[in-house]
Picture 1: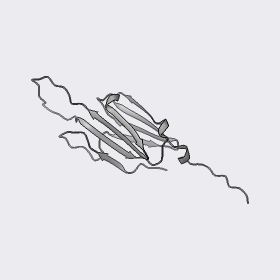
Picture 2: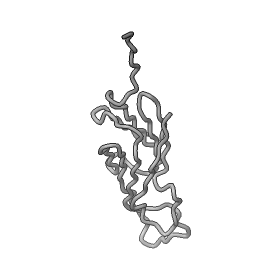
Picture 3: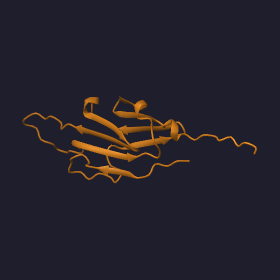
Picture 4: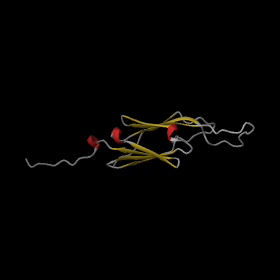
Length: 130
């Protein structure tokens, strides 16, 4: 069985509100013999605001949440949603086939499918009688 370790956060969104240790965006990672599935909550962004990369065994999601545009005479009564650039990197438990990585974005959730590299998939080895 595999577990995802080494979750690392970098440059969190610019905001006056402290973020949790888990970082931004919040992510879930599922592992199977076939690969990994990642979901990330990123409401209010478009696909043009996101950059996803896999280098070695590290998945990185970069993006930028734009500041809300307010009318000239308005001011915030309460501001809890952060804005600015963010970057989140997660160490993957095995090599993935980078050419087959796919990503989709729907209803504020980013879906990333990372197929396991063929050379890293478990193989059954036949034992021959000597």
